[in-house]
Length: 172
Length: 172
Image (cartoon, rainbow over all chains, first blue to last red; front, side):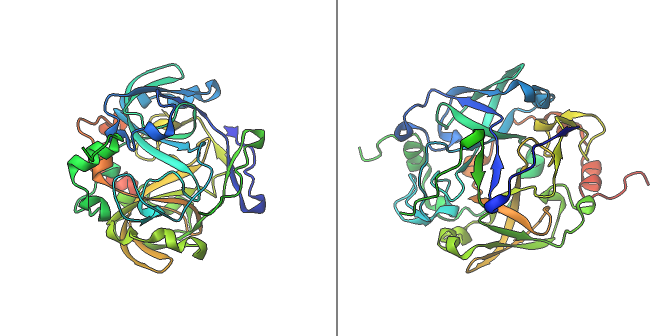
């Protein structure tokens, strides 16, 4: 049993420490794909600090994992935003925009292999050097749902989504 | 444009503030369902602090949302755990166990309705009074994957998963 440092809830704050770092080829915020699903084939690594390596046991059985991370380059937030996939202003909680009150990112990525404390991943949509907060296994048993409505996202056609998702120009 | 308070990265800590609170009928940690999918029909509410109400615009178009929250009752962590659905010890990152290095919870819940700053939800698997960190829309367009392997979770049969997921006794 490892005792975590007492969580700091002074001033109403909840504080976490990065458990590792995500490395990707994306160094320019304005050129990154906007979701893993639009980052087809782009590879990266998750390096977990060695004191947490033991926690990766059995993770190699999972083809996909959720990464929770800190949008460390985002400095301000807006309560309404115009998403990349859309032309209308939406409430920030109805989008995946990084400039949210608590800038925590969530991406579902594919696991290629795990070697000691390094996870090789595919479909990366985060910035190089992103601080990692948590890893969770993806299980359709927990996360698949039927009769899903996706609000404004349902109105974006697949071609536009794919083009804008890769930040290509769809005006051509 | 709203400027967020400067993020505190002193001492390597990343600090967040709750944006609201989750209320559920679950007041006993040992009796809670272990995943939303095993909390069939149990209802709760997400009350977002009124300064963030504007961010909920358009969220009512989504049938399901991810809630990110703080496991506020969890005081220690283990790098390996025996999950409720299993009898073997697994790396904590290959499980959804709350006692993780950064105790951030992720649950996919069903939206019943939204009234001003209150979201009425179904399939709740979190403790009453849980501090809310973020809300993200669920979009199969982003999160559905084919050819998924779920490691040790694939070896748990559905009957056992359902019984243990509801924390009923499967020894009868």
